[in-house]
Length: 361
Image 1 (cartoon, rainbow, N blue to C red):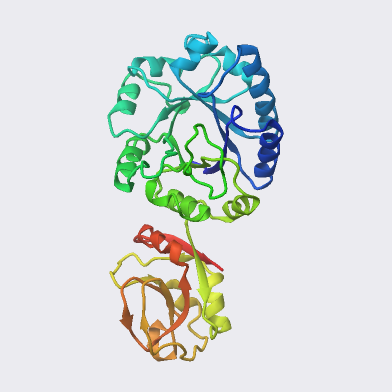
Image 2 (image 1 turned 120 degrees about the vertical axis):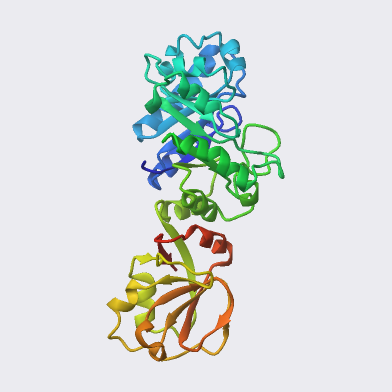
């Protein structure tokens, strides 16, 4: 499935003009999905339609997919029925995220709504909820999954639980989404806003590292910024990441030579299939650069986790092989050429046997 970047909008907590400007700005950076919450609305039905309709109209003009977060309480407040979803067509949205679930049979029936709206399910529960829905012969192409976000610090999902929840959806080949948190965004659905990530351990990380990790799991198709408004710098950083392979930011040493620089940045790296615990090996590059000399430098030190090394002239057939250090060791046949950014060391476990990866500086 193609992977997308998304933003979140909270029309009942934000400035209308700022919302429109944010939607336009994110579109310029290649964002193509909007999560919009209806859970906090106040006012009459006509007011809701007017406010949300203008935002969704702009979003659709910019080719966004718009999913609206709803609950039974909202249906009651607006005096609408799950048996007739035409109200949401009037709003112009593409789908509904069901914050609360039903009995499985109901969700399956909703997936056949004549309006063709996507029905997105809450992914943050490790129960057979989605399996139950699919057992009622749901309209699978119209069933999506999306994790919760967690405004209160300390309450986000632990990683292992996140994986188990996500696997329930991915083994059924369903479209999935999860949230990351802007470090500058102050707007969310509730008065408490300590950031809005799905994963607790990612709450304080740079936003691009959060996104890289989400995509690297292979379990998430759409990564959405949970809080508004992300800064222009954050939007730009997200727009530049590779959504389909692990991409590592490297800081080069001063003595790196041109051959080493080209090996690092101008090649598609692939981890050797027969892996080991000491280093991640990219071996194809040594064949491409076998005739290029590589004099020793920065080679008399103990290499540390996250160091990037390349075989020098003293390494025989392994000259110009690139390696990422996983365990400290010394070997003067290797030159230190750079270091993986500290925040991105957490991405190394996602580089598995035959994984593709690349570097940026």
